Image (cartoon, rainbow, N blue to C red; front, side, top):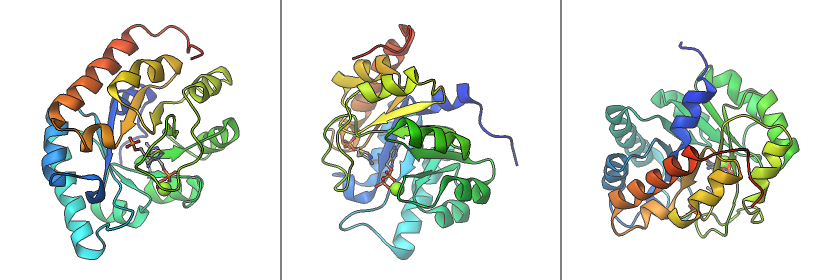
Length: 229
Ligand SMILES: Cc1ncc(COP(=O)(O)OP(=O)(O)O)c(N)n1
Ligand SMILES: Cc1ncsc1CCOP(=O)(O)O
Ligand SMILES: [Mg+2]
């Protein structure tokens, strides 16, 4: 198996990170992923959960279909929560939260595949890193309608606080992020943005992904030290 992903490469993949399941999609999920990839999406997470989510064979079939699209585009395909499914598909990685299986156990099971861990505090971030996280998902940065059990909104300042505390692993901001908010999120310390609705609910999917990508790239070009929002 290949080695653990390098932080520089991880940061590239985090730039425009599309998180989705069939329940988020107004159009057919395969079409959304196709257009999002055409618009420059850099990583995709299969998050098939919530009311009306697919289960059993249809869930696996959809995951396989989206994974194949990502493979063709050369974009990593990450499975949310379900380590079994990630191993069955030979996915590129897994994303887990604080209420899921522990990071050290998942790291042991997935070998060198990408491991993303949600963190809401400096302590959670430090533990996740010690236990083998390749990146941290931090949020909700802004209010979100896409996750019923989301933690309290943290604002971009949490990104600044994590960086100030010396957390230097790749970080993606998530929760309520729109193109207009990208600059603030990146300037506060994120390496990229993870979005559900900004892409899945857009009228023009490809254009929405393109706009996010452009804003991320422009904001990264003028980084400086993490700035307090
Ligand atoms: C990139 C990214 N960051 C955070 C999350 C949230 O994970 P979690 O807290 O486990 O919640 P669920 O998504 O499982 O409902 C994520 N999925 N992706
Ligand atoms: C999965 C997840 N974790 C924290 S907020 C969130 C939902 C993000 O969705 P949106 O981009 O539509 O706010
Ligand atoms: Mg989870």
